[in-house]
Amino acid sequence: LIKPVERIIFRLLKLKTAGIKTTDQFRKKISLDILVKSLVRDTTAGISHTGLENLNLKKKYIFISNHRDIVLDPAFMIQTLYTYGFKFPQIAFGDNLMINEIITDIIRANNGIIVKRNLPMRDQIKESFKLSAYMCKVIDEGSSIWLAQREGRAKDGLDDTNPAVLKMLYLSKRKEMKYSEFLEKYQIVPVSISYEYDPLD
Image (cartoon, rainbow, N blue to C red):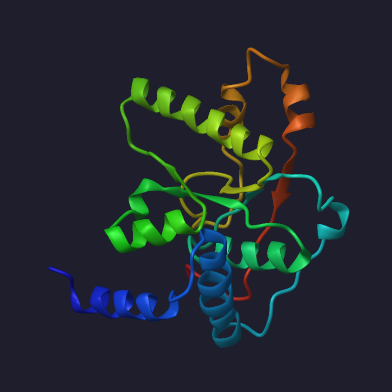
């Protein structure tokens, strides 16, 4: 049975998505124009950014950021990138967020890359290789990627990048090129996101 809240969300989405035929239209009309813009309008005094002027709009990047909030971080990042002129990046989400079919469908419709966690070691290595190959394919085909620098939010405010994230990205290319060559081709952009009031406070 569909719970009352899910029924309301389903009806709202059905109403708002009338006439939408592509995922790009969904992301623009629903994700940005309705959800993210209302978040910015109702919960902030505005968003500011610096550094994008150093990037080339024709190139694709791997944006690796610190992590404060699983919804706000990618939402504000996408809004900023899209407003500046970048296409929608693909976003990495942990499979722990796949709590029901509606959430799963929304994440997939918004270019979500599902990261499987808590697997046995052998299975985790296989999944890491597949994830690395997919992310490199995404870049090669013309899309950027956003992912957090480590699993989970930094509740103590210490933003250290987990080396395993960088190793995972390189995993599928380690036999084809040196790490320096990998970094030259698949350019990693460090991103720092901050809030006046930390979402975890």
